[in-house]
Length: 142
Image (cartoon, rainbow, N blue to C red; front, side, top):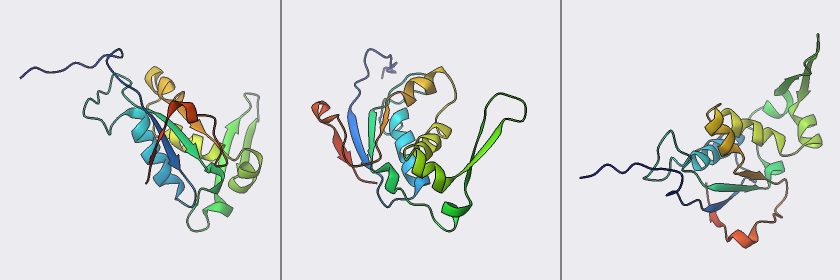
């Protein structure tokens, strides 16, 4: 039996829709990262981008369990001395409703050139509307 070597020219990328409404942030981001990496396919290879394009809708309605909505903090640095900035989850959700989900998904992808290619295939929308109907995406339930 021959071993099949996957290369980028032989991989077919599909479009998938994931509805994040009322689902836990970690569960949604874990499943989306798996779809972006291509681990759900039999041809998965860790050195080739075998994943699919993923459209996440209703990102503003993602759920957090317990008191995380009040206690969770997001950090970034301005690059200047003393430039640490912290923002609460509720404030970040009001300002940029897609950012918490994007950050969680990026944390689960490889932080390399390949991971940066994978994250470009992610499209996140706060509501149920999205402009990707022409790609005929299939809906996946989590």
